[in-house]
Length: 111
Image 1: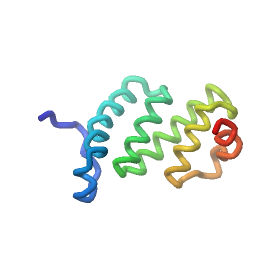
Image 2: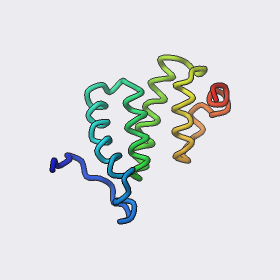
Image 3: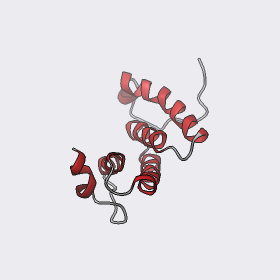
């Protein structure tokens, strides 16, 4: 069995055995590699953040989601579906700060 270069977050035994968590652990290694190869790709960052959230590593998920939002804001402006996606990701984390766009301005527009 191939050993991953990153340590998975500590999870309860029941969660570690779920099929979703096992597949997320494998996908997360690939997502981190994609972010290393293309750090300015917001889709890679967003995907890595989603997988980190599934695995329970909320700080990394927040960092990746915020970086994806910053990249998309710079590229597209406020009124774009990718910006709305990034706002929803931050909203799911429950860490939506006042410094970012409120989901009502862009997320509801594309929902």
